[in-house]
Image 1 (tube, one colour):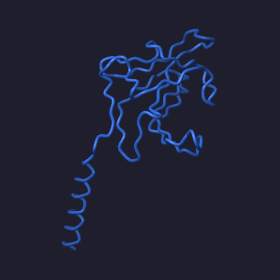
Image 2 (cartoon, rainbow, N blue to C red; image 1 turned 90 degrees about the vertical axis):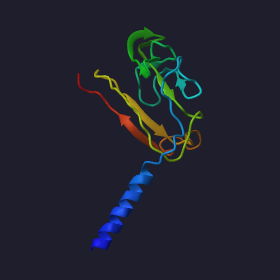
Image 3 (tube, rainbow, N blue to C red; image 1 turned 45 degrees about the vertical axis):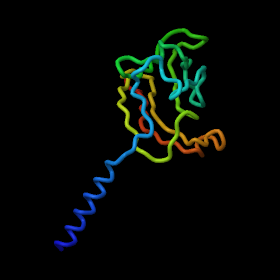
Image 4 (cartoon, one colour; image 1 turned 90 degrees about the horizontal axis):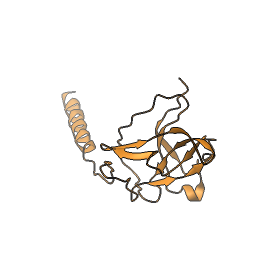
Length: 147
């Protein structure tokens, strides 16, 4: 029994040590302005992508900016190109990709009824097979129905 327990502890220590040996493949610390377009591209326009979204997505700094090392995506109630709201929609498609890894993000969510902030990943083959066949991993998605 002692030998089995010792073997288990040794195996646990090896697995724990290996789990900490991550190799950083990409990061954005948001310490430059404007937003780094080598890492991020904007999707623009109104009507959403099948979600009947009410905002018009823009590239304007009023909707996406960097401040004190934080990327700020800001939804605004304003009249803009036929929409009553604006926001930003950013992605790394065709700019960054990897197969396995650990994702870390520090995200502060708005406490406003009607917003639907999300941070998610889609398969690189979305243009060939479309969604949902390309796969989707939701890291964070919050439908705020409360006032």
